Image (cartoon, rainbow, N blue to C red; front, side):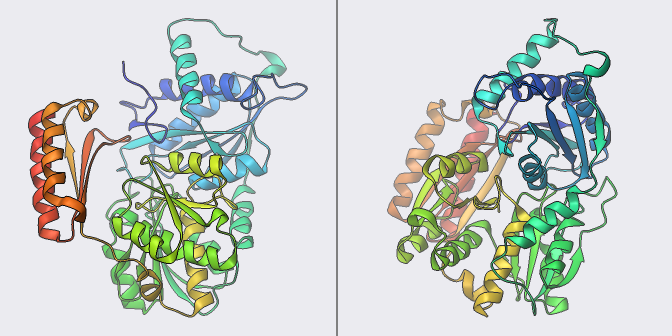
Length: 457
């Protein structure tokens, strides 16, 4: 039986892979692992009942999954604060600011509507280390196999409260940490019909921007549907139509942000990270003069940081690994090409709304267009092909793939690179090729994709 937890929680088709029973059982297990002891210390809580913050994105399936999670936590003796539809980083922030013992977010991020997922946060609003996820999974499987657990009764069961103040508390936090206001900027925001549909426009407006919204009418079924950070066409058109200074696009749970400049050109996570790194260095807040990125970051980002005299540390793909490196080494800024950007002084996880606000604040402070700011780095041609319906577990052990990669690397020489990576959230293998020439990158990527199909199909 495979591991339940992927790179970002437990995810699958709601009511097929991710059932109410699984959500309830995982919540009970998380309560036992995260809520019944001082986080990471092994010492039991004393003199108080544990508290959990629970939020979700607008997916229809989130309604029944939230009910299951709340039931599981309360049955394990945890008091629950239901914050409703809020971004993942809002749940992380509220978990920390309210002193809760754990947080739970129901979302499948950028995945299509039929999917959903469960993400857990430990005390302080931090994502879980692999060891904690493994402990939760072992506890869940033990309970599922019939191992008894102590069930509180009477006054010992958890109480459930609707916490409506979460929205205002989170928005006030976002606006409060900005280095400057956004007065004079017109900004288009695509909320992906997701968790940031209300939060992000409100935060930008409070910061002084003239806000135009699209993708801001979630109905439970339209999340990520042709909009948001995975479909930038509508945002590009809206920015040009409204003569906006820039556009910001979120994914379903708003832990990521991509942008569009005033001409409608995409500004990806690497470029956003480069702009913020230079701004933070100028402000003296880029600790150790270092930014953390991943192995998927464009080679152009690394070269731009070298030219600017900023050190770069690369991690495995996944903002959790970026965060672990940042926390372990005391760095202040890190992120991914996909738009997960972590500003550790103000957030414990990737925060799409905060990222967009910080990016817009840089535009406002410098008086320069986003296109000019993003020109600090040149994106080398990069081709990414997703290969579905293959055995992704054998990527690193297939002799045929090893030989195919070696041949591709020899062809590219020092002008490019190759990366094969099994997805942590979807049943597919990602083939990424960078080269100085787009046609060469495409040809090599297509050849490697065929090799993956042949070797692992």
